[in-house]
Length: 77
Image (cartoon, rainbow, N blue to C red; front, side, top):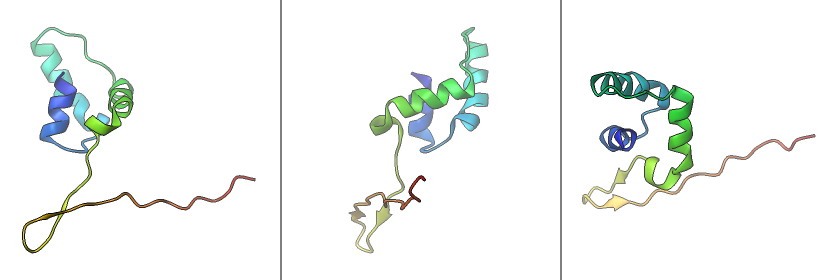
């Protein structure tokens, strides 16, 4: 799948920026290109494989494990 390959080459690249690259690829191979919203749905449907987070590295070169911070949200009234 080309979207997955693009995401591996450019981690966290959004659907709007993937679209022109994918559109060019689809025209060359005579394929129907998905719209940006469809690309976003494909990315969000498989979050563990398509979404990556930046890595921090210790001074010794070891990768520091990162955890996503929880965002406090206002309660709905």
